[in-house]
Image (cartoon, rainbow over all chains, first blue to last red; front, top):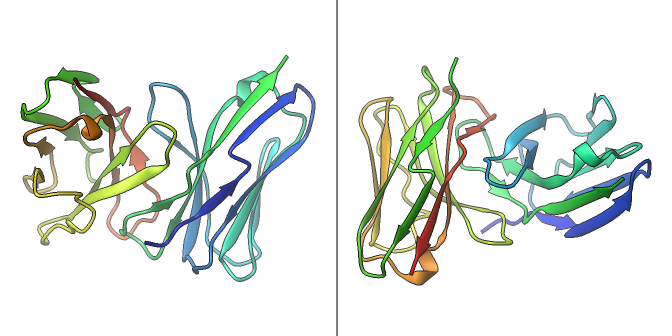
Amino acid sequence: TQLLEQSPQFLSIQEGENLTVYCNSSSVFSSLQWYRQEPGEGPVLLVTVVTGGEVKKLKRLTFQFGDARKDSSLHITAAQPGDTGLYLCAGARSGNTPLVFGKGTRLSVIA
Amino acid sequence: GAGVSQSPSNKVTEKGKDVELRCDPISGHTALYWYRQRLGQGLEFLIYFQGNSAPDKSGLPSDRFSAERTGESVSTLTIQRTQQEDSAVYLCASSLYGGVEQFFGPGTRLTVL
């Protein structure tokens, strides 16, 4: 089974700090997705990156796909308590194939 | 434009009983996926349906697990003779034909006593 390794597993920071979450694999993926999941809910899609080296910005969140399409990162600037949640990366080999998920990074932003 | 819905939201059952979990995908989405999320773990693929093609069952952990889907509509995941290790959140997702983006339902939390 191809795995995605996420780090760190847990992160507790103060409001206003910056943070980066990493997602690494030895396998190449055609696309990579980032989800955020809150307790009692399903994962909600944040972004999809498909091109090696691609950078996408969503307000204070910056997503990067590695040149070799084996890794990705999520950077949050000036974190806020509303950013608290479980962040999951997921890789796809192609369209309409099961996603391979990392174990997630549980982020807690303290006011 | 309703999202993916799942029922029940919670299910508590006794070891050895059978359970059925239901998923209603987004209208027009031909692909439907079932995943399992154990406490503190990422999502684990179980089974995938695409239109009228034979399903990809490669993720089912044992023959106690099965799933059906009629056309491009509702799917049911059945777990027979439940065991305590089956306790998890079962998540359903759907996507457009050829799409990489999957949209998830809220999940069913299964507890086997």
